[in-house]
Amino acid sequence: PMADRKRSASGILRTSSQHTPITDAVAAAPYIVEEEVVKEFFTVAPSGLVQPEDTLDRVTQFVHDHVARGNRVVIITSGGTTVPLEKNTVRFLDNFSGGGRGSASVEYFIESGYAVIFLHRKNSLQPYQRHFMLLKDDQFLDYLQWDDNINSIKVQSDNQKIKTMLQRYHKAKSEHKLLKISFSTIHEYLYLLKEVSERIRVAKSAGLVYVAAAVSDFYLPSAKMVEHKIQSIKGPLDLTLDPVPKMLGALKHHWVPRAFVVSFKLETDYSILHYKATQSLERYGHHLVIGNLLQNYRNEVFLYDDAKSSEPTSRMTRSEEEMKSNADLEKEIIDQVVSRHTLHIELNQ
Ligand code: PMT
Figure 1: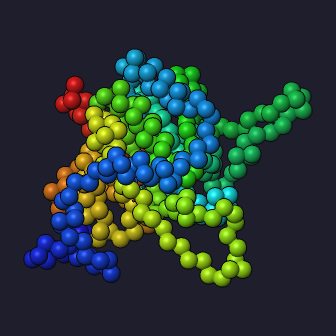
Figure 2 (figure 1 turned 90 degrees about the vertical axis):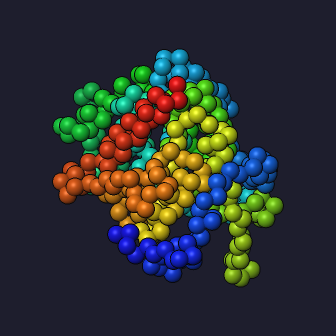
Figure 3 (figure 1 turned 180 degrees about the horizontal axis):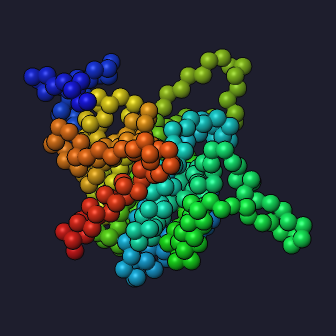
C-alpha cells in the first residue's frame, strides 16, 4: 500500500495526491519550540480556564499518591479542541474527535494497573459511560424503569457487558484510579497539558503521555478577536489564523523528559501517513506514533517506532467478528503500549 509514495533522486517525497512535495530536510530537523514561544502563546491566547480552583492541586495529590504506591501514571488526552472566533464565543472552529479512542483507552490502561489522568473535551465520550452512549438500538433510558412500589428506579438489564462495565467502573472509582479534567479551547488544552505533564514528572520513567486528542493547528490570538458576536450584515467573513506552536517537542524534552510518549497521527490520505508519522518520531522524539486514517480509524491503526524504516512497525486491525461484536481495537493498542512502556522503564531505571 505504500507503493504510491515515490521518492525522487533529489530526496523529495512525492505523494500520489495533490499534496505539496515535502522535503527530507524538513523531516529530519528536530523541532523543540522555544520556551519564549510557549510563553508568548499563553500571553496572546490566555487559557480562560473554567476549572475548579483546586484542579492542579488535585493532580499533584493524585500523582503523589500513586507514585508512592508504585503505580504507573498516564495522561490521556481525548476529543477535539475548539478555536473561539469571538471573546464572547458564539462561533468556534472544531476538530474531528468524539473521544472514543481516548475514553476506551482509559479503561484498558486502568485494567493494566495504571492511574489515569483523563484530559478530555467537555461533553465528549467518557470511559465506562461510553458503553451506554453507543448503544445501537436501545437508549440509555430504556435500561431504567420507575418502580412505584419502591419509589425508586429499577435497572432493567441482563446485558453481561454492561454488568462487567459497571463492576470495572466501581472498582476504578473505589481505587481512585481515574482523575478527569475537561477542556474546550485550544488555549485551555495546551495550558492544561503543560501543567499536568509537569506534575507527572515525579513519576520519572513510570510516567506515560498518550495524546489522542485532535488539536487545532491554527488559532485566533486574542488581539485579533472581536468582543461580541460577529455580525453577518458586514458581508463575507475573512479569517486569518495564526499557527499554533507545535508543543510536542517541548512536551517530550522539557515538560516530561523521562516519560514514555505516545502520540497519534490522523490523516485522510494513506500515501502521506507514513511520512507524517515518522516525521513526528524524528522531530519530536516521541517513542511511539500511532497512525490512523479518518475513513477507518476504528478498525485499523499503524504503529511507528522507527523513523528510518520505510514501513510501519506493525499494523492492527479489527476482524469482521470483532466489528460485529463491537470489540475495541484499543485493547490490543494498549497491550502494545504497556509492553513498550515496561521496556522503557527497565532501560531508564
Ligand atoms: O475520538 P475519536 O472520534 O475516537 O477519534 C480518535 C482520533 C482519530 C482523533 C485519534 O485516533 C487521533 O488520530 N488523534 C490525533 C489527531 C491528530 O492527528 O491530531 P494532530 O495532527 O492535530 O496532532 C498530532 C499529535 O500532536 C496529536 O497527538 C496531538 O494531540 C498533538 N498536537 C498537535 C498540535 C499541537 N499544536 N500540539 C499537539 O500536542
